[in-house]
Amino acid sequence: MIVVTITATIFMFPKSTPKLAAEAPAKSIDEIASGAKVLVLNYHQVGNNFIALCVPTQVFDEQMAYLKDNGYVTITPEELYEGINGNLILPERPLIITFDDGYVDNYTNAMPILKKYGMRATIFVVPGFTGVHSNYLTWEQLKEMEKNGFNIQSHTLNHRALEELPDDEIRAELLNSKKMLEEHLGHSVDFLAYPTGTYNLHIAGIAKAVGYKAAFTIKYGNVDKGSNVYALERVPIFQTENSMKYFFERIDYRPSFETLGWIKK
Ligand SMILES: [Zn+2]
Image 1 (cartoon, rainbow, N blue to C red):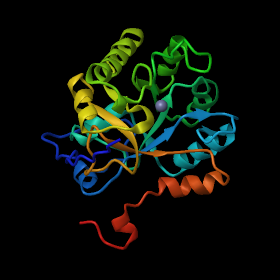
Image 2 (cartoon, protein in one colour):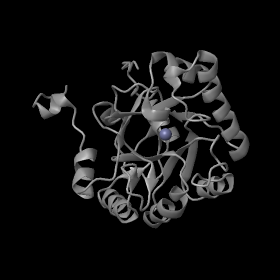
Image 3 (spheres, rainbow, N blue to C red):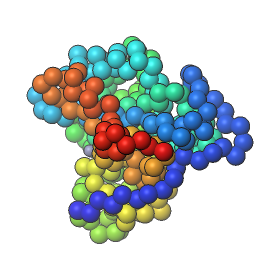
Image 4 (cartoon, protein in one colour):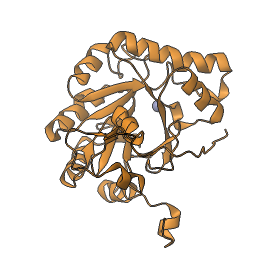
């Protein structure tokens, strides 16, 4: 597997006066461009399975309460995209909550908590599993979730390891999932999360060619002006022994040049 870090400036100055995001205690895009970061959390399951990918329901509730109490405002991938293109002023502490794979507990366990705190979230769904396997969300559930603050995007058609596939199959995984989600949900699907988090420059190029605006990885970090839109950073959250201490450490991401005491210009 080759992991390529593509450098590009994604935060640009606005050409005209950008409109204000809904709940935004606003910072100007200039301030955002000068160093603000977007926290993108990555979850899988919420519930009582004793596996790392499953965060206990009560712990998830505590994590959401902490974020709400500390001024984080949930945005969508589209708002992030508009923000980094200078068309939208992002909230001071922008947050995207993402779930990968589309497990049914996102509906039963996560949704009531997110609704309680008035938070929005994004699910990267594998449409080849939707309504097929019992532990994955159904189309009816996905539609109901979209009415309750969720945004549904693509995690490829069948969750295959893309870097092992020939080009035509990579293309089919990326394009057919997009089309299938768009047909069922009735809106455009413009964002992708790479399955297993692996990607390379070639796969990113195919994602762009089939029409995705941006793609998310599991590369640990925050999205900022140094991010590439086809290799956006996230902060994966797992079940651990001391869940809240671990959570605070995870969301307090510091690039090594900051932890070493160097100052970012
Ligand atoms: Zn996945």
